[in-house]
Length: 369
Image (cartoon, rainbow, N blue to C red; front, side, top):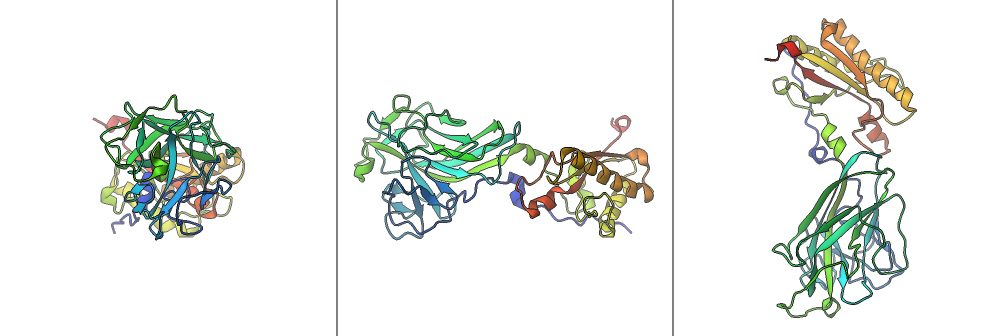
């Protein structure tokens, strides 16, 4: 009887990597906003978000019946980029003082030293602003930033988007900042805003529109939405799961589903045998293929313990294949310990996903023409 790999596709959210930013689209709120923020002592903006300085960012949402509505508000007329909310910040104000506003969020888990991450967010020039600018940026820090001033944060941003012109074809549309960086390690907070002073920031006077909001007559105000920080290395290493054996391809990494071991041991439980028989079937039907088995663990325990455990679990799967008639010369088993988690979160669900065995099919070098 021919076995099929009856493995479901991974949820589509995994294809873009896990976002480490909570409330990334500003959909959640403590109370529905009614207007702009006027209290500099009120640092909290929305769940997961706060102001790191004395500036007063504003929350907009479709729930609002007043000046903080996400479609038509005191700062302009704009659809949201996604969902039903966004925030707004001053990124430039005319004068020597260089008034600024920023938004700050704590990441779901610290960044890992040496790993590559991608930071993204969308921003839009508010239609009632009478000045536009050429830049916006983001800063990653290992601790929360706090200042009683409302001027530029005196730290160079991790990511800085600087345009050639302060007014461009896309001004007034939703634009995206998207850039990759290598983590220094333990970064836990992201801050978004303009980190340059007025002398370093180009500005353009939008004089072909009337002044509809006096507070924006000498300023540039941006809406911010859909903030994301994701581990690029995890995205690239993410194993695939296909729906049928005819779709299995060489040199693609797959994850074995429903493979269970005794706690902190490498002994396979009988519930694993059904899935392993499917793998045996594929190898028997493709007698020229070899397979590499890779064991992975969660982050509980030392590096050495998890390295040995991951190797032992990969070897247990290899032993099962051998007992079912697969020649050991076709099997390679390796272990990666806790070095390559699929989920960086410290939750039981994440740990369960990280405890896994992956497999990759290949052809012997001499068989490749």
